[in-house]
Image (cartoon, rainbow, N blue to C red):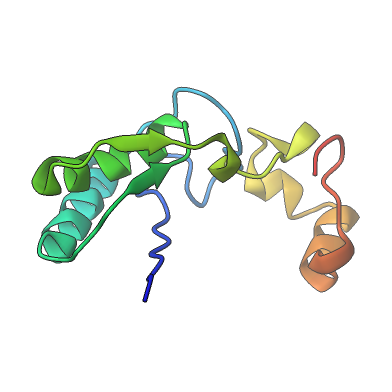
Length: 118
């Protein structure tokens, strides 16, 4: 039986403050680096055949410790890229919370499209 583990990237300095989306050069902060190390320690004795990662730096940095401890290369996979937030990418959450469109997202996420994005 194949088991698929989906692991979100570790914390970065924009978490809870801004929508990073597909912004480049967003790296794990110290807490995120610790999270990545802890995942690697937790999974080191697991039978893992492949590691796929979004090409975003924060995702690759999360996968690197696991790749190192189990000696399996990371496969960059464009299909795992973050959602396209369009015009909202990089915006501060405090500003977005004030928008009616934010309420539309919260109340009807299934049919919501980000302005200029997905």
